[in-house]
Image 1 (cartoon, rainbow, N blue to C red):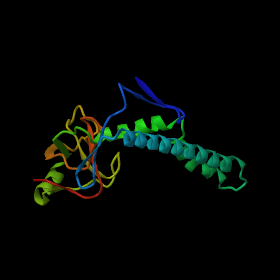
Image 2: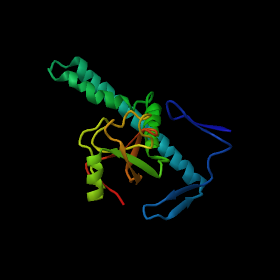
Image 3: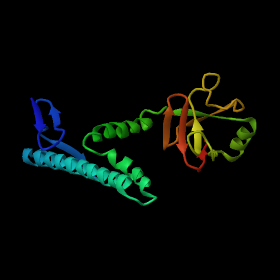
Image 4: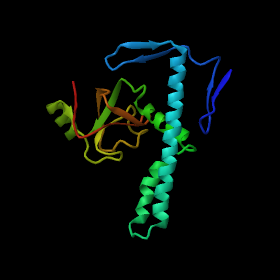
Length: 196
């Protein structure tokens, strides 16, 4: 059975035998809340459908508003209206599904990270890390300030500087993001990583 919510443009299609009989949520204090009332579940899905439709319509309206300012205004700063127009265009009815997939897949940078990574440093850097028991963040890096880690070093990983030949193994710190699998991981920010 395929259920189509006709109030949406484009329609939301839920595939399966039937809509879920129960929904399970976890509250802020960690308690599990189960809702098995069919009318409540249908009401929730209707509200989510209406919210999606209203928000994408608002994105469409905002895009038209900023485009009108950018094109029709005589003000010398009018072309700058293209900037908010680009962002509002990401949540129009035609583009919102792709925006959702893109932003949702960005979370994959945090999923299934290795338990241990390696920070490559120079001899002087290794002495400093040994003395202070911390790896200081780089203030300037290819992907912004932070502590750079990898699971593969040179000669395969050309992101590691040629001078940084000493590997220091660390357990993957919280907040680490995968930029390029096996080659570049970053824990962004200026605070150091403590080494045990």
